[in-house]
Image (cartoon, rainbow, N blue to C red; front, side, top):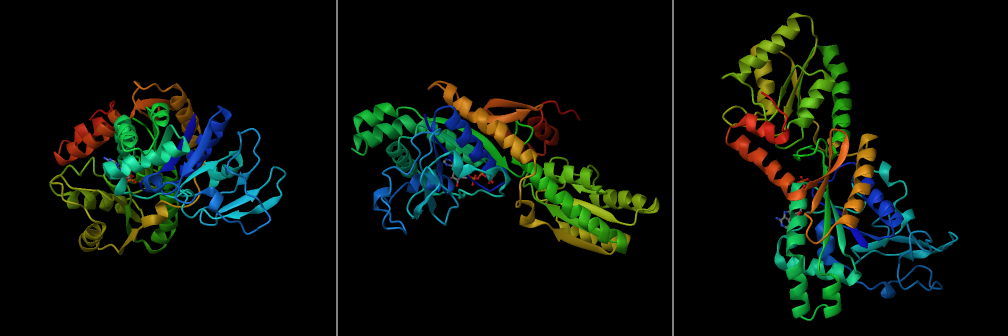
Length: 423
Ligand code: ATP
């Protein structure tokens, strides 16, 4: 099997560990492995420059025809992928051959050594992008043609619900795309037959932990660690000056980051989208609570506002407004801190190395066992076990959460997130 892996949507810590796990597990299971740079956009762009036309900075080197190890076990050419710098080429003994630009090449064959150490790298080294072209049939047809040209028949996508939906659309449409490519003379009948079906597996890379039917998404634990570190830093200054801080944290329509940050950072009050404050006037509810904390001797106040926090009428609750309420009603010296993109970046914490590694291995197994009739799977984790979940069921459940919130049915929203949720 020839497996390609791509990262798509917003970046999250642990995406590199996914690529590493899929590449290593794939090679160990006898597959050839590829990475696609820049998400779906890379699939659409494909390889416009032929390898043989590439130059090296060492003219005496005769570049091998295929820039790829013959098999995983006997790597004869190492692509040291630090994208943008191009490939560093070495022979089997490690002697330097030259470098080759990756310009015009988005689908790149990789070996075991290319992903060494990737578990510790933040962001995604193969790049991520949002692709308008992939949303069109023509774009997906071009992507299919590029994949077939390289002989790829299986795809691992690591991204959010949009990316996983795109993967499912692509897979469902694949037979028709192949037929059309053949009809237009863009691929041979033999290739059309060989590539009649596409195998796809999704992994959820998202700092928001907003996917239903899995307990944790790749990148969420690291984002939580970053927020915790920020709260620890703020706590000391808040305490020194007896100040209040209002922290806005990411998470979009999901309150997981805000809630867990509140628990682990000792917040006084937390606003999340799924559980808007119950009383008519949340301002009074919050001030009463903080007043009590102050009365028992707390010198500092921390309020966390999730990015998507709302009141019972679905009106956004904004950090600046919360600050004004604290300052005016309680007379607290109050500051707002928006953590922004610092929450996304940096080295993955240990769990964002373990989770993608286990899930990447499972993704390869799921591809090897896939049949044309089995559903596309998303790899999740439920009660500490790595699981396979029909991808579109998880996406539909995730979207149902947003719809339930819009309909002000907050209990239903929670039950879609967690089937065992009880009011
Ligand atoms: P994040 O949660 O970080 O936003 P995401 O995966 O949900 O990640 P999107 O922007 O929704 O991010 O999707 C990423 C890409 O997936 C899109 O730019 C597009 O190329 C592809 N995609 C999304 N939805 C579809 C769809 N319905 N059909 C085809 N492609 C899609």
